[in-house]
Amino acid sequence: MKNTKYFFAILAIGLLAGSVLTTERYVVAPGTIEHDKDLSPYNTWTNAATNIQWAVDVATNGDTVWVSNGTYLCRESVMGNIYVPITNQTATNGVITNRAMVVISNAITLKSVNGAVSTIIDGNWPLFTNRCVGLAADKAILDGFTIQHGHAQAISGVTQSYDGYGGGVYASLAFNVATTQTIKNCIIRENIAVRNGGGIHVLISGGMISNCQFICNTQSPGVATATDGGGGISMDWTTMEVVDCVIRDNVSSEGGGGISTRQIYPGTIYRNCLLSGNSAPTGGAIRVGSSSANKITPIESCTIVGNTATKAGGGFWQTNTGFTLKNTIIWSNSAPEYPDCYPGTGVFNNCCLPSTNEIVSGSRNITNHPLFVDFAGGNYRLSPNSPCMNTGTNQSWMTNGIDMDGCARIRYGRVDMGAYERIYEGTMYGTVFLKFILKKRRY
Image 1 (cartoon, rainbow, N blue to C red):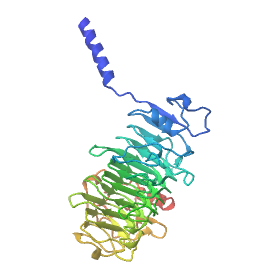
Image 2: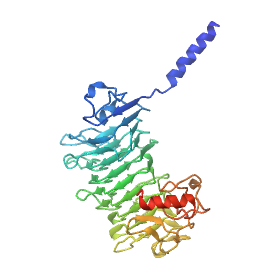
Image 3: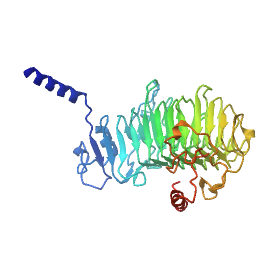
Image 4: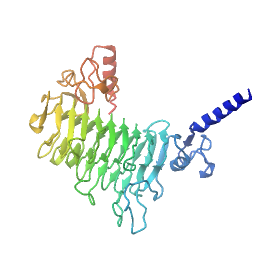
């Protein structure tokens, strides 16, 4: 009997040692309550932090940091550092690189209480030149914030500086490390980077960017080179998935007004995204380059419309790469050469575009006008007579998949082209839903 007691005691100790104890931390906007950093560990609302970084600093793996409503404004120049896998990261002027207003260096969740519209991280550009958020840990999650007015400025005297990358968010980890970082339910707008990724730059990281809006971000001219770019999103050496995102009105001085990718790996996917109103010299919406045929980039069920390039490839531009476009609408983009697609080695299947002369290979593509609900008003859902209805090719992810409006991807046996499924009027669901989205569009 005595031995049995010892056994269960040892078993209980072992279970406790093997378990992961997590804590919830809390943040409220400055001025909401009267206290300061001394009330760490911020584990109740009554002793909440009034600075996001304070709560993030005490959080450990598995913790959740809850952030209440308000605007969290950068009020000083930040000299923090996040990991960059470059050994010669030095500065002759003593400035530490990779400054960010909020740096997440543990596997925690940073989450707003009431969503992106109510919770704003503001880099306070032009008063300060800091990016807003840095993700520097595997399994780090950023959920439900507006991230705005960040500025990633290159530093004079810095070798291989990454300061000019990711004006809104910079996500990076080490080479040869399997990583999963998540950015979801965010509005990333009006940020600037002088090298890559006005909205976000992803370097050597995997995971997912989902249900986010990238609006009016800029990759600005000056120190950028021809391989730099990405007004909204820039990705390099990554396996990140980008799904259910709106990417609009972003600008790049080099290439990829909406998205620019360089070295990418299997697992990188762009799916269920709307890209409109973006501009760049090449690849007004998307520029894909510097990869190889065995590193295929799928672009699936996207709508790419109304983008502009000053040189070539208003919708899509690529070089030396392998990619596939499926179930995608590429329409009414503009450029002096190849207004919709710059020809390359990619494969187009079940796509809608003005001319098949701009593609090299593929099948089941159509050149009929997609007939959007309201092109001038920016409603790129399909009208009742659209030729893109039920003309896509079904894929395995669609079995339980949804479109940009949260509707089932396969509703009538065969998927539609583009980012939105057409819901037939005349049914209770279809009629109510269509009236709702026509009056109050989500995007």
